[in-house]
Length: 173
Image (cartoon, rainbow, N blue to C red; front, side):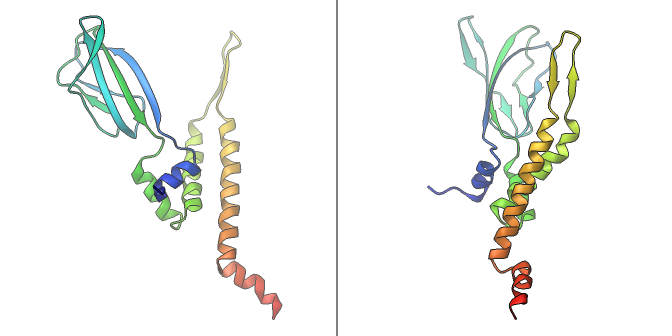
């Protein structure tokens, strides 16, 4: 079965579905839990069953990563959640396709540009024990990807008879 345009954009920007598994404990007051990720496509929640197995709950979820249990999770009672999420929602990818002129490369460039704006959240730090973290190099990689996509867009539009190709050929007259 051929890929849809949304799937092609996801492949181009490597936005593969990511599976997460987590075990948390109730606080005795919360019935609604916010997961760490958005764009959740599927989720299942489980609670312990007689100490040896997990039993599925009647939990509901939405794409924003909100889980709603049918009742309050008792204090210190474990629950287990398995969910799948992506970086961009289908609506965001559709918007990138529109803003990118309907082309896969244009949509990929729009997605990378969105991630570049997100670079404001990037950080670099070093702890006194020598542990360090640097997430700022992602910006330069995104910038290189964006430039490569822009070159592809320019090359495609020139070969498709855009104004650029028309003006280049005017010297032949």
